[in-house]
Length: 70
Image 1 (cartoon, rainbow, N blue to C red):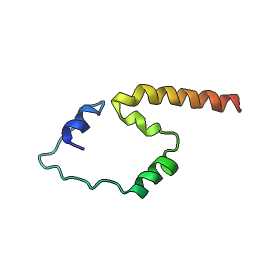
Image 2 (image 1 turned 180 degrees about the vertical axis):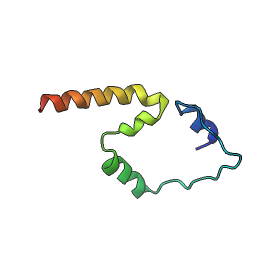
Image 3 (image 1 turned 30 degrees about the vertical axis):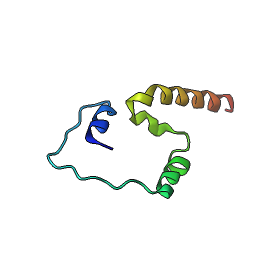
């Protein structure tokens, strides 16, 4: 991911240091754990401007489903 991609997908102003080191891409297992264990409902999508509306809609859907089962 490039700095431009990070900036364009962040909903707030970033403090950007002079030197930025590249982080290695996650392994397939790390991605699986993030998707299936850490965030099985996909709420991490709130972190991205482009998908925030869809994520908020999903959260509301989950709230309604939880309320129906209460």
